Length: 119
Image (cartoon, rainbow, N blue to C red):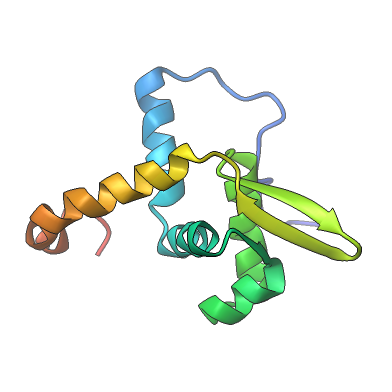
């Protein structure tokens, strides 16, 4: 059966620090993942279906993004009965996203008009 590739490699290839930092930014570079992070920063902890409801995204899409965020260390999950609750795993993420918003405040036009980044 042909399916989608696994989210992680069982034996990851060692990468230089600059590539790892780029990957970290790419993790937050997806608008849905960033919206999930901002929801969790604002709310503290949410059930997956609450995230789905608030984003207006499909459960499958949110699940995929939560798996990425969890694997990469941005989000932590805990089970409560049959529910899985998600929260920000590291308080430094709040500072990282806040810094990005401060940077954007003085660079919004340039970033919005850049055609070297995804359209």
